[in-house]
Length: 191
Image 1 (tube, rainbow, N blue to C red):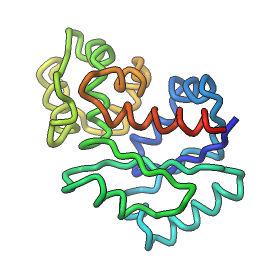
Image 2 (cartoon, helix red, strand yellow):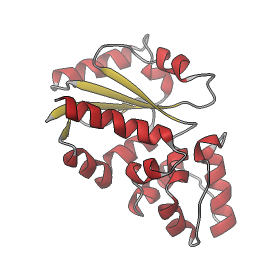
Image 3 (tube, rainbow, N blue to C red):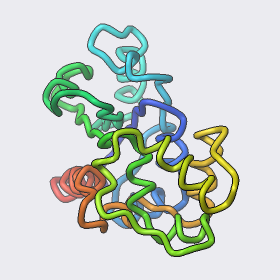
Image 4 (tube, rainbow, N blue to C red):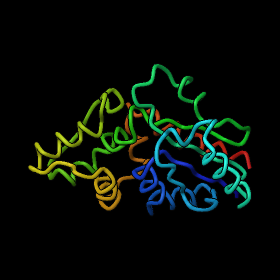
């Protein structure tokens, strides 16, 4: 069993990685989560120069993490390489990016959104939406006459209604979710 620590950009990512669905996925793949999922409170704290990042990496290593996976949003950056270069670098750190934002993974999970919106929902290309969180707000207003006041509250509602990264990764146009799971599977199979 491989030991993996997780550092994430924000609260929504933490909610998703702490979900029962993701924890079951880790167990199925023989991945032991080391420590808690650590919310770094913004992408600025995931950088090479961040003292907090250095401290949290050390904490996870001290707890026995063999690998540390960093999950952050791509946002509107010019390239994956540019963003990955900003993230703290080490041989045991893997940076994974949600395109454009983690909320694009929510858009990719048609089943859960259909439950939340009370109607059939499907978006053909979730990772092409420039601001997925704003898109979801607008869609929720359209279908339920309620917006999203709190992104973490919406992430919790997604998780509580069945969201899983596996379902997002199954969408034909959500490669960043698929990449994230593939990286974890690679770590598990290499052990």
